[in-house]
Structure formats: C-alpha cells, structure tokens
Length: 425
Image 1: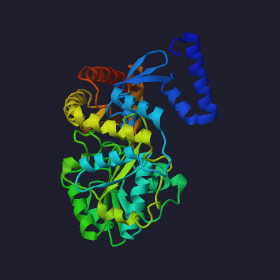
Image 2: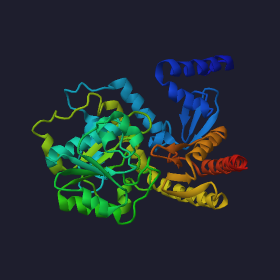
Image 3: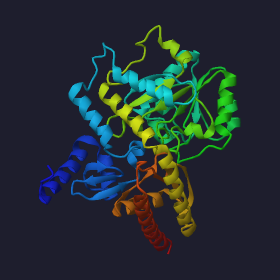
Image 4: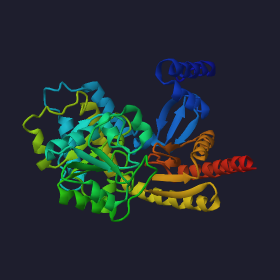
C-alpha cells in the first residue's frame, strides 16, 4: 500500500469521502470538507499523524485524550501483537490472567482504597457501570451531576451529561437526574438528598471548556456526599492517567472517590479499553450475582495487555511529570499570546496537557481550528463550549513540537485577526 501512486492515493481519498456520504455520516463528511480536511489518515507516531500522502500533522486533539503515551508506542504495540497471535479474545468461561494482572495494577495506583475493577470498552460504558453500581449499593435512584459536564452519549451517561443539544432529541432519558452549576457548593448541597445514589463529576470539565474546580469544590462535594450517604463518582476518562500532571486529576485536590471511571488512554492508544474501579465494601453487592453486570468484549486479553504495558510506560517513563512540565511551558506561552491577541482570546486555562483557549465566539474558534489545520496542526473545539479550542496532545509531545504548535498558532491567530477586522470593517 505504501507504494501506491499519487493518482491511486487520490482515488482512495475520493472513494473514502464518497463512502462517508453514502454509508457512514454525510453530515460529518460535509463538516470535514468545510474545514478542508479532505485527506485520509494513514499512520501515527508519537505526537504526529500522517495522511495517505505522507503529510505530517502534529496532533493536538490526541483522540480527545486517547494517546497519553503517544501514537503507536513500540512497547504497547509489541505486547498487543504478541497477544494477538496467542489469544486476542476470551472464552468468558476460564480465568483471564491479563485481566487479573491489570486489575491488580489499578488497585495499586488508584487513590484511596479503590480495589476492584470491571473492564469494558469505552468511557460511556464505564459510566453506565458506575451508575448501576451506585444504585445497586445505595438502593437509591437519583443522580446529581454538573451543567457543562460530559460523561458519554449512551442513555445513562447522556442523562447525567450537561448540554441540552445532545440530550433533548432523545428525551425522555433516565429519570431522577439533576444538573447543578459546576463549582457551586450551595447548589450541590440543595440537590443531594436522601434519595441520591451518587454525584458524578469530572474533576476538570473537559468538554465543558476545560473548567477547573476551585480549590475547595471537590473536597466540599466529597463532604456533602459522605454526610448524606451518597456515593461520589469521579469521571477520569479524559483527565486520568497522567493527562493533568498527576496520574489522576483528583490527586491535585486531595479527594478520593467511591467509584472512579477510566478509558481513553488506558488502552495505550492501540486497543479500546475502559474500566470502573471501586472499594471492596461497595463491590460486595456484585457477589450474590456476579453476572448481574457483564460485557462480552470487556476485559479481553488483547486490551488488557495493552492496559498493563500502558501503565508500566506511564510510570517507568514518568509521563505524568512530563505532562506537568510541558503543560506549564505551553500554558505560559499561550498566556503570552493571549496578551498579544486580547480581542480574540478571552482566556487560557488548564492543567498539565489539558488546556483550553477560549475565544470571543464559536465562529472564531471554528475558523482558528481550520487555520491551524492548514498549518498541519490538528485542534478542535470542546463539545459543550464551542468557543473553546482544546490543546490535548499526546503526553510524549516534544518541546520542539510544542514550539512548532505555538508558531502555527501565532500565524493562525494573525489570520483570524485579519478576517475579523475585515468583517468588522
């Protein structure tokens, strides 16, 4: 395939776009074409993705948090290939060594006394399982979450997410859900009552626009849950596994959840893998009927060896510390750009390599993303706040690549500035 002629590659691109229009998602195809992203991704390495023509793009979307150890990390790929040739999927009737080993590793690195894990395929599945576990343990029905939060697009996960544009077309959703403003402890105090099974929050709202909690917020929510007998579920699907400069974002705030959800980076950017993790006390409710919650593909040997090697790489290469140092540098440089383009950039905020650049309106953010793509840097706006461009690259991105991103961003901002000035006359 690598020896294809330019004409053959162009034909593949045209056919792929046509098949998107006919068989996949015409609206998404039109969106990509509008953004002039009319090429086909072909291979990845580190912080870069290459299209079919060999053009390199620095990936500052990072699969929305998937490529924490970089694209195609050789150690993860090697383990997956070995397992693929040996036994990729489980019989579901015999013990699975790799699942047991991964669960042990998660018990060792997760905060507090979280001990037991259930493995699935995605963040939304992890959230679904966490909600079911909370209801089963507390024998309560209600869930409280935050406006602007994002937990997935399956029915339960969508029900506790916080943007109506994704929810209203599918109502009625899960009953007994309530959203309150993020960072508002008084609203949380009023919402959590004797019927609340759990509060579910992202420690840092990702799709909400990279919204950081106040220093007292998560501790305050923890106290409210403990006092009122509700569980605290922290959704670390996007913030976990080194993204914010620590292994888990909740560690920045000294808070331990009752249930933790993970996915995205857990599979090393090679195999889909999600999990929810909880305490021995809470997990006891699964003992009477150990098949009350199950997943045919969840915890398969292929994904678990990817997860095991990913956790080893994260720790042995000290990737959380890399994210902290690189993120601090990038944030400092972005703040300089904010001062230079105050009429375009309203705010820059983030932690580690989860950074949001908020522009004055959504159209400007879309325009900036397109300008960046033309400069071979991939960025995207956050789903629940389209004014915010996220910078969420693989945590292995180099300092030189960060400088290239910053240079491209400066040029793109000048381009947006010129267009804005022309429109304003």
